[in-house]
Length: 388
Image (cartoon, rainbow, N blue to C red; front, side, top):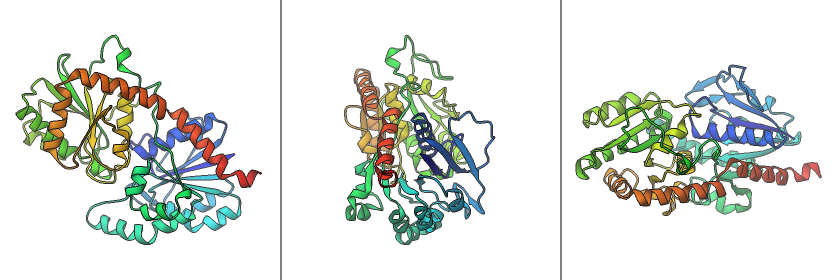
């Protein structure tokens, strides 16, 4: 069976949607599917994947959006077209060409990763799009995948879910449990530069670019300042992994808060090395501020390494962070985040138990091989009419 995975970003770009698409492609290829990924951006051509990657050359490119008029022609002949949404400039082409593609036997699966929120003029454009265009894109799909029922029920497309629930399927994101191993099985914790062996460590992992403005780094920095000042937490470091155009702003804020000796901006960390950061951390924090955060890949990555998490109480995110593996804090409330960090950092026995439970849940529910099996089932069900 020929599968086309269509996604706006793809590794090495550091972003959750692209990483999900990559792992989908890898698992499906392992199951014997003929997979081709279509994505924006230049490709080196020597990538050692077990699937094909084709670079899309957009007529217009803006950030992670790109208008690709030729996409419809490129997708002809695929049995399943798996669109990772949002992909502005790509999703619209698939919608416009849907009847033609289906006439030639294609089934369309839309993976609804997140609402598009935005700020300022972008927010106005997104609002117009989700009112007039998004419903048409959803209607063109044979099936729609969401990462949790909680998120879909509280998303911008909740009315569409309610109107046609059988069209929607829940498949969570996953994690490579063999690469992100349990720190409780290590003889000693990894060394992280500038973090002393007796210091506690709070970890943030995420994009520091404008596309990921919603990650809440400013909230985290203010909360960390409060943690140090009000909770006598002197032997502690905050490590921020990630890079992007907003990094200078965050570094400036850290300096203004007099945190330059306490906050480490580690930059981009290779996927083969990120496990060491999760393993060394006492807690991983994801203080996202709005519905642009629908799941939180870093949460299950951290739990896979046996490290508990603190995250904003947002739809979708809270389906991952149950009270036996971490704590939820009020979005945009740095005082509450500081209190939750103190709760965990002052009770390391609880931290250990949460981490152990987190690893168990990830292995049972979020391992990529299990997610691949769910995709396999969905593809077979969706294409059953075609091949029977």
